[in-house]
Length: 242
Image 1: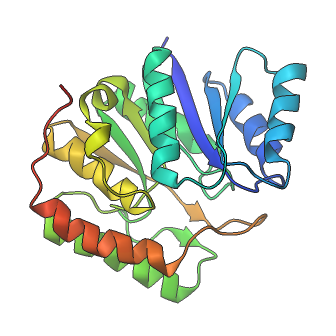
Image 2: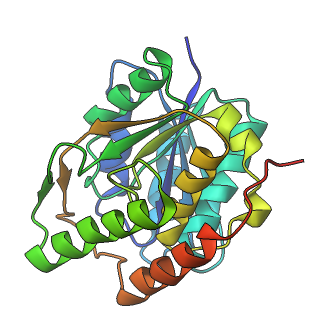
């Protein structure tokens, strides 16, 4: 049986934290959870620590950071922790239920049963599968992925997806020191590194539902970073970690 870790970055997710944790632990497949909390002033970390002390001592973990340090650095912190603790498969997932916990086994099976090194929960590999987003945001996200695919030549329909499962060997090979983008462009850069290093990528269709509780962390600056970062990425050499 594989050893699986779900990394969930949080900032002001008190409405969602306990519910998403319980939803993951209710699955038939066994997952551990690592919360990376960036100093949430709303008490998110206290909720998680309460669950650790009372119920989930051996399967729920938290790393607390001071202040908002960026999505990319949160995941890299989690990746390093997951590698150190010898997890076989390491997942990225949002706290707000836009990623359905019931899809976690689908991503895992894409790796364990179908040979993927990176499984992507894809909103766009079977048309557009997004619920409750304004049409302008859907168009921006869809064509952002189209732009990335054309510029980088990467055969991935959902290049900005943040619901993913990595085999540990992928994360052991990627040079985290060479990952430049810190916001949602980080998602593109990690996929591109995986692709250029020769790993097998498989997209798994999901339905993405916009958050009901809490506040979105998206901004126009996120898309600006991704647009210019992709152009720079195209001319950068991707080398494995030494």
